[in-house]
Length: 89
Image 1: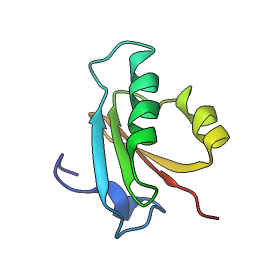
Image 2 (image 1 turned 180 degrees about the vertical axis):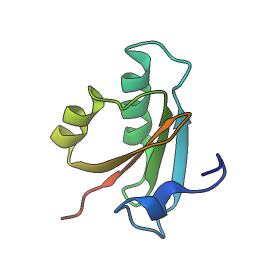
Image 3 (image 1 turned 90 degrees about the horizontal axis):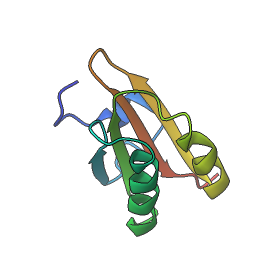
Image 4 (image 1 turned 30 degrees about the vertical axis):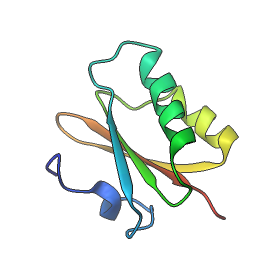
């Protein structure tokens, strides 16, 4: 998947959702967690956030669960992509 291709189709996220991206691959802890949560707070509920990381964001998952977000992570050869969206269920 290219950087410009949307990974929404590879996840259960709404395929027609508008998206924002955040690339945290060069950030050291805890910045990826903090930056991602801050970005989510500023987004509309219908917007999915696509996070590019160098690993699965294990410490982020419980925070997303606590805030009622749905998410799915796709491992690729050179990066990890996590799609985060408001869980309306």
